Length: 240
Ligand code: PRP
Ligand code: URA
Image (cartoon, rainbow, N blue to C red; front, side, top):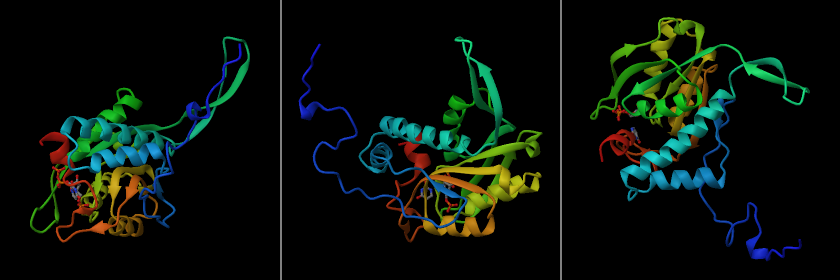
């Protein structure tokens, strides 16, 4: 059965015209900061959520796709042990399984947007909350509330917040976690867009803590908003 496929119908990672010259993440030299691979998919998803004309429903949908990629990459940083299974064919497969307990901690409000992505990958995962708000005038973070799983000190913690600007809010959240006995090397901070300043001050203060981000932007504006950024994540996800 000979089927002639015209070259234009070829299946594969071909660009339709010339390869577009998209902006990709700033490179970072800190060994514990991991930036997602800058694939055409990821860049297209980030383009959608950065666009000021993207309506809220689309913003939620495309943010969720990036969150899923972040969670999957975060899970790659957890330890596994050897685990062999027998397939229905009777043959052995030398695989692995996860070792250790995890939980999520979201920095409210925007971090709560990442909880469903974590639940989609880790069924019935425990999730703690820390309410930290950035003062609109001074941009200093203020801690209002925390509620964390009782046995959190025995777990790996996936800390969730989509925006990492000055790094003040995330730093305050990590100090809360450390005060409950969680060592830095058992905390993974997942976020969508980071500033180079936030990354640098965080990586120097917490060298053993792993950061997994989709993109490191150019910097901060005079209001300490990430640029080009996407504006206020919490407003776009929950309100606008
Ligand atoms: C945003 C964001 C981070 C923080 C980032 O939250 O979700 O928590 O600002 O800024 P920073 O790195 O300079 O601290 P915000 O306090 O605006 O509250 P929200 O989650 O209610 O939007
Ligand atoms: N919070 C946001 O939602 N966006 C920023 O750029 C900075 C803080």
